[in-house]
Amino acid sequence: EDRPLFVQFCANDPDILLEAARRVESHCDYVDINFGCPQRIARRGYYGAFLMDNLPLVKSLVEKLALNLNVPVSCKIRVFPKLEDTLKYAKMLEDAGCSLLAVHGRTRDEKDGKKFRADWNAIKAVKNELRIPVLANGNIRHMDDVRNCLEETGADGVLSAETLLENPALFAGFRTSNWVADNEEDFIDGKLDQADLVVQYLKLCEKHPVPWRMIRSHVHKMLGDWFRVQPQVREELNAQSRLTFEFLYGLVDQLRELGVRVPLHQKDDASATGNLAEVIAI
Image (tube, rainbow, N blue to C red):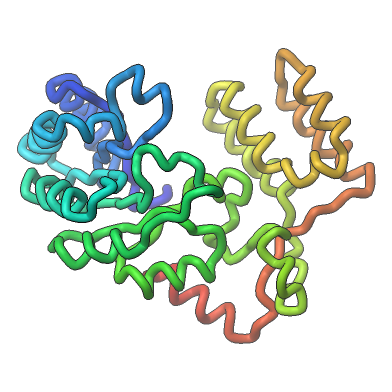
């Protein structure tokens, strides 16, 4: 229902990747290869950003899909410490058949997004180097960041990862309280909070089942601000070894009954709605 739809794989074997991609190509608009994951699991599995040390393999993965699929291939990468290496990497991917490139402006070793700022200048350089569309990833916490990033990088779009886990309404123009503290007078209560989002999320999970460990993790992220106010509710969640939807809906009800509300905010600006629509259209 939500298009365009990208299906992302991590891989290190071209033949296995192609077999997997063929199973989904009739159901999606792009098949994406994740060359950006910097986590330990990617190191152990030899995929993601740890293939940056083996560019011939990276090239073979892209070429295998580009030559054999009926849908275009996209890639997500991280930058090298040296800009010239990043540009060579990006150009190699384009030449191999990548039709759209997402660039995370941090290196493989810069895993902590709060500690390391993404390098938008590197993303801009990649955008200027390539003919294909380029998406920017990194430092996107609210819609002002979206606008600034598009302006500074010239990118064709933006991605957000960590922020979306706690605030899935980011691209609808909502932001959490920690991003309004410095100029509260410019913002209003958006009449939406993360508990509302948790309820929406749980309903989707009932309709489209996913592993409980993922649900637990996402609920923790979305209710993080609430848990800081009512830590005993967080402890109840942690102590629950076997989750159910009934328990999680009850958890949300319990937070609301405690009289706690942590609203999401929107800009109090008559022009904000028009600007927001313009950015989303991009």
